[in-house]
Amino acid sequence: MGMLNATVLVVNQNYEPLNICGVRRAVVLLDRGKAELILNGRGELRTPSTTVPIPSVIRLVHMVKRPFMKHRLARREVFMRDNYTCLYCGKQSRDLTIDHVVPRHRNGPHTWDNVVSACIPCNHHKAGLTPAEAGMRLLKEPRAPRANPYSLFQHRTLLEEWRPFLPWAG
Image (cartoon, rainbow, N blue to C red; front, side, top):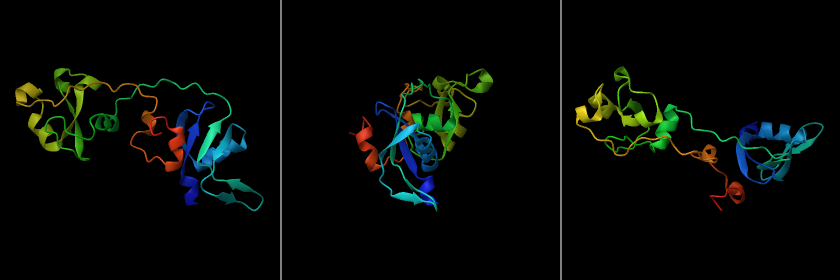
């Protein structure tokens, strides 16, 4: 059952990386004729009536137009943008909070250019003040991350057998 939870790289008809899905979803796409097996690096699934290859990479039969997605403003996305670093003191940590540069109670917007990662001590020190009032400086100005069609693959474990299909890893 553990192999069904493994990840599979999905490439477009032109071999451009599109997504990562589970083995179960990949097998369904193969069975319905929506994708073809490119790489089987894991062996086979056996049922009483059939044997199915466990895919590592599948290719969609029809070209899919990649939607140009903006990054949604979420805690995890802010932490990734700031490289899990407090933008006030520079401490790297997984134990961070979100801080509004101009506090919300002063009508500071909840936008990419007004939120930063902050460690708990810095966030408590700044409290409901602006950085200038608290005597603190931002290490860099916050801004929205640039749209990247491959951002889905950041901070993910990428398998060695996927390298030929990843333009930045070649």
